[in-house]
Length: 346
Image (cartoon, rainbow, N blue to C red; front, side):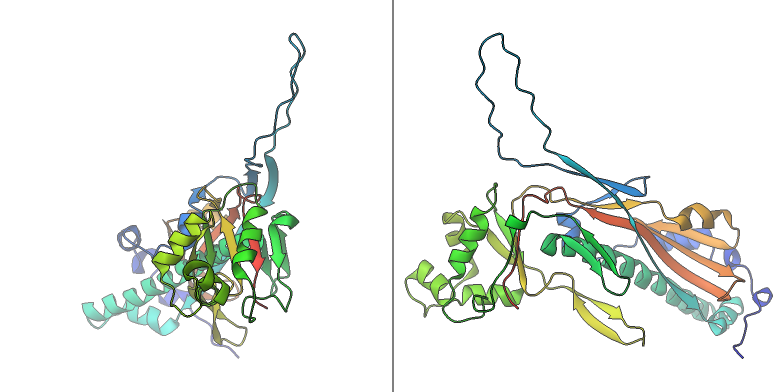
């Protein structure tokens, strides 16, 4: 029979973790800025729905010639509005009973500080886990135009135009001998109505590009010379093609068996072309937790960036004291018509 925690044995949460201590800790938390934070800046809304307003095509729609005194042609607005429900993201950890006992009766101030730092470190892990999920969604949207979660059987399609997407045939992938990567890049760029000025891919794809014989011949006239980034950037700009950069950051995913595996934010087999305009936003909304939990005296809560955090006790199953981080978020993709997404490796 599982051992139950007698919550009456412990001081309440407000005593163990004062609001001031939590505020002092969380106020100055500075987490690493992810690439998605610059491509999709954060915006907070009070709605649980994201009204995605795509900018429509930036290519001018030509006006008709008109006789004097004739009624002007009525143009249609090209922006398209799509309503999507923000995703509820949450994760929690249990504070062990032995740690609660030690926090209630620390042998030394140093021990109390150590134990509290462990709890605060858990909060850091939880918050960064929520941030990682939002980053993963943003990179999925940028790379594929879709957000999918096989575990939860969730799929959200942002409807990137089919003519702005490509999957290379198995004989034409960029790891094959003799493929013309430059020609593929020109084809991708020409498919867009805007001029792409930048592209994002993985180090693996970038190395294949910069060691490709036809790329080297196009730049140096020979396929035996090593290509520097400066020379490659200058060549791409001169050709009206995007400058290519890489993103290879990873996160840990915990399986049902507790095993951790490393996974990528941006797919290793893809490249996306875009211009310098804003791609979209990471849109955050209110969570059920920040509405309900603060009214409970047994809860100490705070906001870290756009993530709600709380330490609370519950007498419901599972019984215990918990640390929790939660957010509702979804990437808005205003540039849905202005990117080219390609799978260039199998």
